[in-house]
Image (cartoon, rainbow, N blue to C red):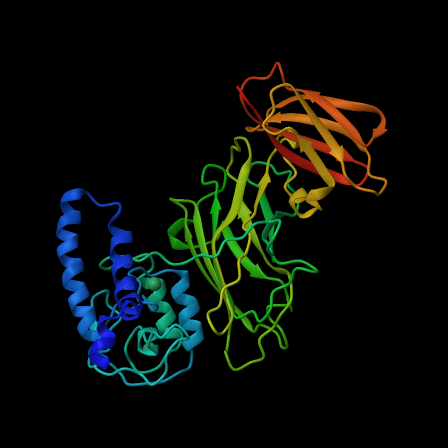
Length: 411
Ligand SMILES: [Ca+2]
Ligand SMILES: [Ca+2]
């Protein structure tokens, strides 16, 4: 009976499909020739995996730091490490955090919710998951082995999902200045349930933000908001992991609960702040944005989170108000979009919101002109006919705040 089951479609779907899709997905970027070689490897891999699936054996090696065993060491591995923290199991024959395949002699009794064994979280192989293993993730950060299967991120939209928000405290800056950029997650009425941890990247403008010398993060640092909601009951229950790369303009972070045994908080709002130092010459907008986000609860379940960006500049005209994305987007209607001649701006609200002024900018922040209402009105029209094809920003000032909209000019 078991033999027949192996021939069924259900079995093929269960075991063969995931094995097929993984390697082929990664091979897409490879050349035809290497793809051919890869196909041979894949077929070998299938045969091997098939045997493993039948006999119940698993791959028996650990690459120290690659806790989720996907081929790369990054901040997602920190989340997995945090989930396994303080657990104990069999030590490896050789205790080493060196970047090479470390034979795994005995599996641990515990597994992650996705089935992966806890032995992978013991980066140095001494039989305990603790801070020393986190240091190995740091040492081996961004190293890869074999075929990398990219980590899953769960990005949402500002309209539908909680936002991982970056917001400059004061968006007007000057050369050499130290500036604060606030980090918050979710908002009132759009909160996070059962927070265990979040991994994300902050992509930043390397031309305008000073490098931090010698692997320090002195010009790009993070500090928790005291007693924030991610701390929950008791202070400093949330921890941070920070990896800064000035060359590519990426700071990767993981924020995680210190212990899985403590009550897991739910909530929304400020988490912390970044402090960044401007270059001696600032050109245009200084931009920062969140990306590659994965929020998890203790079961590794990940709701979608919307990324966001913020900008700083020396000149207020260069600043496009990005805070408006948090305002009720339905309030302001801009149509048609894309446009060829007239664009209407209409306030849908039944409240007393009225348009006072509309400024027009290019995407690069160049100011093109203003339309000022002789008296505040619920509707305004702007003529785009004379503008060249491209994307434009409208900054719409009302008595209830400033909104921005992108409008495309069609050829
Ligand atoms: Ca990994
Ligand atoms: Ca260890």
